[in-house]
Image (cartoon, rainbow, N blue to C red):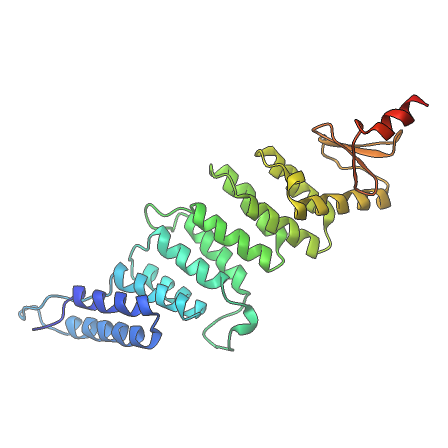
Length: 276
C-alpha cells in the first residue's frame, strides 16, 4: 500500500497535537520528496499525485507556533502563498500569534530570519490579510485584533495598539475592556499619560466606565496631575478645566481636583463650604 495525501495529513496533524516539530519536519520532507518523485513520473505511469495542501501546511504552522519558532511559521505561510495555496484566516492568525508569543531576545540569530522586530512582522501579516493579495475569504477578525493589540501593548507600541483598536471598532467589533486597559498601561509605561487619557475617552464612547477599573482610574488621575503641571486642558470637548474651582470636569459631570481625586459635591463639607 502506498501512502496518500490523507495519510500524510493525518501524520502531520498528530505531530501538531503533541507539538513535535522534528517529527512534523520529517513528515513535511517526505511529502516534498513525493512531490519531486511525482513531477519526474511520466504521464504513462499511473500514480496519484501527492502535493502539500492547506491541511499539511496549516498543521506544520501550528506545530511551529507550539515549538516557539515564529520565523519558521512565517516562512511556511510565505511558501503557501507562493505555491498558490489558500491559507484561511485561522492560519494567518496562527502565524500572527506565533510572532506575538515569543520575545525578540529569545530568538537565536538566523541568517534566514531577516531584519525587523517580531511585532513588525505580525503587523506585516495583518497588512497582507487586508490587501488585494489576500486569499479569497481572508479578512482580519476579532481574534486577529485581540492578538495584535496584546502583542503591540506588551512590546510598548501603544500608538499601533491604539490604531488597531480604532480599526477593530471600524470593522464592527467592540474591543474587550482588557484591550483598552493594556493599551492605557502601555502608554503609561512609555511616559504618555495624556495619550492614555485619549484611549480612555475612546473607551467611554463604547460604553465602558473606566472609573470603576482601578488601573484606569489611577491612569486618569495621573493624567490630571500632568494637566496641572502643564497648565492646560484636554483638547477633547468631554473634559474641561474649571479655573474658578480649580477642578477638572469630565463629560459625565464628574469633577476631579487637580491632584486627581474625585470631588463629591454632595458631601456635607462641600455644602457647608459653599454656604460660607
